[in-house]
Length: 145
Image 1: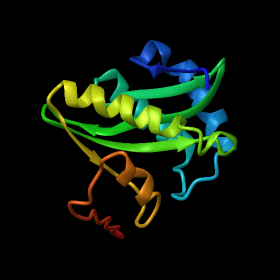
Image 2: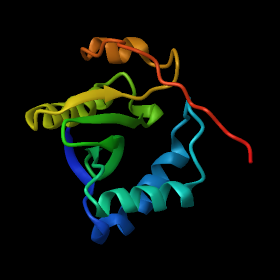
Image 3: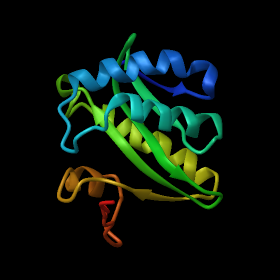
């Protein structure tokens, strides 16, 4: 495994390249959670990156992006880890673990508590093996106008 973990995007200047990488990656990954419409996702992530409210890292095998993770929310004392994905051909080889450990260790080094946002019953053993423990449940509510 010749992996390297790099920041996929930091700030608006690199967001354009990120859009192609993430879009291409999402097209190849089967998701447990339905992904948002990419344009809406892109606008949200672009805004968060420009305001240092998120960070995004990826693992490459050579020049191929094979796994990624990002914080979906950050504050001065905590961060929510989400949007973790690994290309199906690269699962069970440590790439997903590498990127989750990397981003988690960076957050912990900044004295931030790391929370995880995942689909109910999805990848529970994966995250438990990395030291995550369930401490509560999130609930989404949708309101009609």
